[in-house]
Length: 487
Image (cartoon, rainbow, N blue to C red; front, side, top):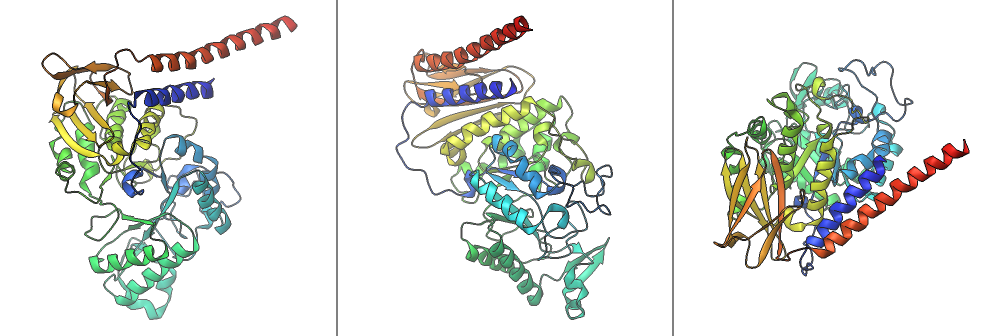
C-alpha cells in the first residue's frame, strides 16, 4: 500500500507538472554544470552496514558513538534508491581513505582505502552503480590535519613536511613545494584510478590560492568534467563557492517564525544583479556543525520543511546532510552523526521529493534569472525566470496567513499563477495585481502559465489516477472476501 500511495503521489505531481506547462520548451538546455546538481552528503560508516565481513571488531562498536558503526560501500549500494528517490544528483560520501576514525578525519594514507568501508572492487562497484542510476559520486580529499600515524609521517626524510601536531593529528606544511607536489600526485592518482565525478578538498589550512588552482587544474586534467569544491572559504577556482556563515544564517533565519532574513538574502544579491557566475553551496548545516534542529526553537518538522525548501529553490547548489529528511538532531560530532534509521518514514521525505521533481525538471528553477520581490521578517518572495518559463516562489515563514501582492510586471498579460504543491490558482485582479493568499509556515512554487480557466486536461488526468487507485482498493476488498469465503 505504501508503494502504491507513493506511486499515486508521484504520478499526480508529474501530471500537474505536465499539465501546467503552457508551451513546449523550445531552446535546448545548456551544458550541465554544478548549478544543476543537488548534493546528498553522507558518512559511509553511519549510513548502512550491508555486511559484517569487513567490520574490524577492534574498531567497530555500533553502541559506542566514538567508534566505527559498520557502514560500508555495499550499504550505500543497497540503499541508493532512497537517495535517488529524494531527487539528489550527487552522492557525496566523505573521505574513503584508510583512517583511524569513523568520519574519515584521521587519515593514515592517501593510497589505501579504509578496510571497514570495503574493498577496492566494492568501491568501484559503488561508483559504477551510482552512474548507472544517472547520478554522480563525490569524495573528500583532506589536505592536512591527518593522523600523526600517516604513512608519510613515518618517513624520516619527510620530517620537514610537518609543521605541528595536536590531539593525535598533524599538519602538513602546505607552503612546502615537496608537500604540494606529493598532494597533487596523490589526488591525481586517486582520480585516475577511480572514476569519481567530484572531489571536495577539505582542511585547506594555509594553502594559498596558487597551489589550490594548480591542484584543481591537475584534477581536471584527468577529466575536465570532475567537479572540484571545498568546505572552506577560498578564492581558488572551485566550481562552487563555500561560505562558513551560510549554515549559521539559515539556522538563525528558520529557527523560529518571523525571523529577520535580510542577512540570508544578501548572499543572493549578486544573482539578482546578474553578477554571480560561480554558484554558492547552500546548506542548513554540514557534517562539521551542529544539526540544524539543535537550535530550532519550535516544531522541528515544520522548521526543516521551511529551511530545506528554501535551499532547494534559491539559486546555488543545495547540499543536504544525510538524515535531515528524517529530522536527525545533535551537537557537532558523534551526536550529530547518528546511524541512519531506515525504518523512519516522514512527510518531509515526500516533501523533498516533490520539490526536487520540479527542480530537476525545470532548468529555470535551477539556473534561471533571480529577482527578489519581497523580503521581510520571514516572508520571502522571489522570481526565477527565463525565456521559456516563469516561476514565483513564496516562502511564508511567519506566524500568520499572508496576502502577497505580485505586480503584473512579474507575471505578464493573460497569465495565471498555479501552485505546484497545493494546486491553488490565482489570477489577475482588476487593478493588474495578482493577490496570493498563503497560510503560515508554508512554501509554495507558483508557475506562471497562460490563463486557462478550468484545466480540463489536468482534471481528466487526475481523475484517471484516482480511478486506478479506487479500482485497486476494490480488487483488494474482493480478494479479501474470496479468501474469507474459501476459508
